[in-house]
Amino acid sequence: MRPTETLMHEHQIILMVLDACLEGVVFMIEIHLYGKLRRFGPDPRGDRETVVRLDVRPQETVGSVLEQLGITPDEIAHVFLNGALLTTCNSMAPWLRYRQVREDFSPCIPALDTPVQDGDRLGLFGRDMAMLVV
Image 1 (tube, one colour):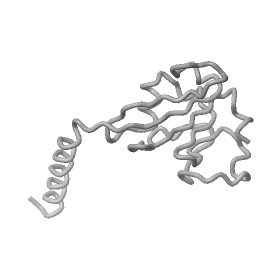
Image 2 (tube, rainbow, N blue to C red):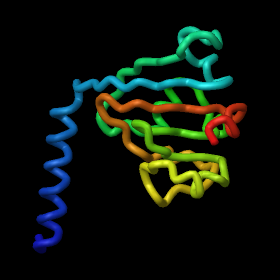
Image 3 (spheres, rainbow, N blue to C red):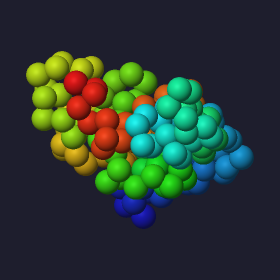
Image 4 (spheres, rainbow, N blue to C red):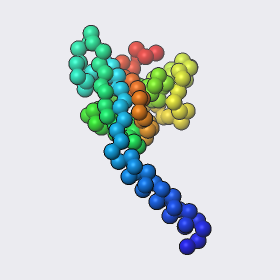
């Protein structure tokens, strides 16, 4: 084997070992649902806070969390991750100077590939709440 092939092979073995170690590991995240997205929570009444506590495995993403909840990406107007803006459909967001998770997001396209970790808090705002975040 050439040195680069050996290195790639060793890297694959390390990843397999890590996957095996994390196989039974489960993390907890909180998802706060706003607007019409409340219907995906345990109590959709408007006078209650709608929070879903969800067990997730390592390497889960925002997209896999949405899928577990049954929420389609086209229902989302804004996603906040730990209080920072991850995705928005609001063109005013750059001028509002929200703290952002990443600079490379496209308007109205949820960053579904963003990983979630133990203790994370997602804030999901439906399309009916698009202007209220401003």
